[in-house]
Image (cartoon, rainbow, N blue to C red; front, side, top):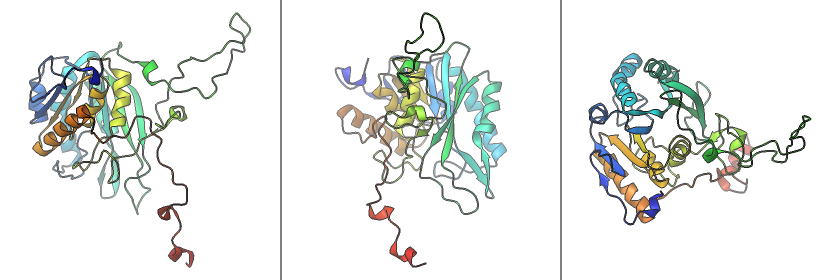
Length: 316
């Protein structure tokens, strides 16, 4: 099943139902999750509020922030299917110029709830927070947990081209001299560089959504669609439900719908819900501004004015 094989675009429903293709719920995350049936989602993926004072959150003490999310995490694990995956993408909490890596604080919470950590994935980007009292932050972390020992992992969907596809078996035996790799490619590492034909170099290098990004909307901290697509392809099958409990402008839903999955998002801000629904309709009618999966990250040639040393600096 693929999004574009539907005879007519599915509607965006305001409440969950088992057959709904796309759902956007306006409301409190905990209350909305409590209304969902147990085990309905194959993939839960989200980037929760970081507690850094953005317009959609009230800044709290770190311990209070973590404690306030515990009931929601319990509900997320309840609605996650056995064999399902939970991907939790976080950055740092900062206080008095000291950083507190949020993945360190969330790991024991999910572990106590019975999930198992499969990978700690690094998402790297070239443009981010500029600092004068420490090195500038250029990465965030995505924790991939599973519910149970047996889980969906579609390795072939995310294999990367082998660096040496012509490598052969060198040990004596019946396969001596035969190709030693997989014709579909190799298993990418937990640090990926998402550039065309270069996943195998190990770094998830996806541009974060800043002012000149084609996906930029009204949301101040927006998921790139590409970041979610990798998880959707690897951890779900067609027709599975992908749930984002802090969905913002529906980037995770767009990634799921593009690949024939069902999608559900929850957000308490009506303007984000409206923008998310608008983007889903744009996906269906072909007008969505979107950075294609695997597109190389732009590299300046040195001829652009902004990539040249200013004349004023040359005299110093």
